[in-house]
Length: 147
Image 1 (cartoon, helix red, strand yellow):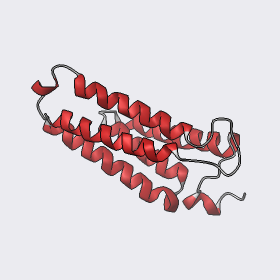
Image 2: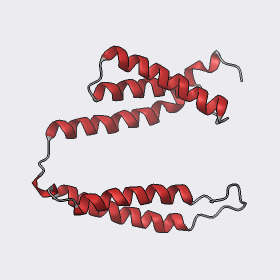
Image 3: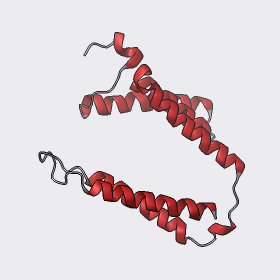
Image 4: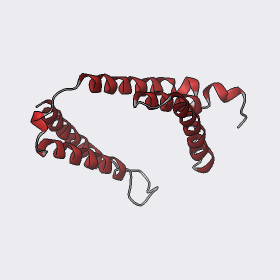
């Protein structure tokens, strides 16, 4: 019952955001599809997922599983910590820590989670900063790197 209620509320929320996103206009044409394509695409995907949860058979027989709720709460707290530490620690370190924590949350082993966290932070920084030319905060590494 709670899943269907949440899905219905989320579907209404997506519809309201889609109405709001439909009016996005750019003062100049910087890409062919405009600024509203990305939010509308994401809202369409979220709406499709919500609609599936509304009509999916067997959802009423599901029970709330407490360890799953605890893991979801820890996941949200990890993402909140990532957002708060993004500027002070910098992209590389905060992404590495968040990836490490998420790996552990989903029953990963310590060493592979640590290695994947470091690789994720470094490789994504290289992709965004060097290849795509998106400036990212360096945080603690600001003293070592001269731009």
